[in-house]
Image 1: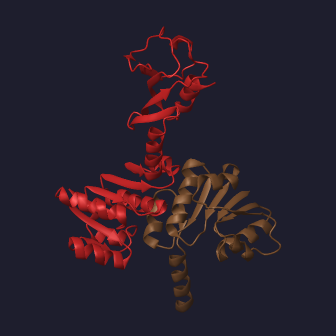
Image 2: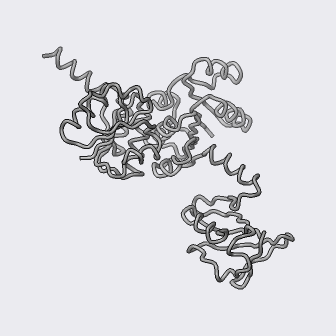
Length: 132
Length: 220
């Protein structure tokens, strides 16, 4: 599958490397070229400098042919706007979006984004660990 | 009316002043504590420090009873999210967002934001109006009907010079409303009206066909 990832932080970079190793075609986008250092040397996809909330940059990342778009920057609102651009302007079939704020995540889930909140997931995970 | 404003920067600040003068009930939500203090000192306790994108903050200020919700921070993404939360969680009847990237206008409209104000577009429009060499000027946008009224000047070397309206390859549903010749005489064009160099044409067009109309009238 063709996957466009916005945000080359720790999670974004690791996801890109994993998917690339799994045989997917990956384009990863970040507005700070220095963040591409996080990509493992084995990464065979495309790393592209650009702002993921700008339609032009997304076009350069071939979003029009993408099967999946993943918004993985630090900013909830940046992820939300770019995910909605991908979904509503470029009609990407699957759009996945990280939203730290659980309330916002719930809202956008009902608005049709495949949104998940690391806050909620991690809190439950730790709770399970403690409760055994 | 109860109006909530997100962002206490310059736009939010002066907007609030103007709305208070018109006797509206206004509340600003601003992240920056220093800005909040300044606003409170000057205009009373009408500012809450907080994140206008957070449902809990919006709940606290009674967004459910707001008549209007205006997001004027400097970030398009913050303005979008604040308006979406206000719209979908609190059913605010009218949401207004400031936009910096003109490309976002279509997205915001699609996502149900009632009014968008693109500062970039507004400045651009004024530049177009003030630069007389520009062949196409926007005069009015009828957003509900998706139509615009524009003014087009026929340049000297245009292929349309000395042609009649009938011969022009006008896009569908575009109408020439008025032709103003160089001696400032306005005429209502018919199919037989012949265009002259320097004529100014007021036309009805749409966002999609605007470029075609411009090409039809001014191509050289």
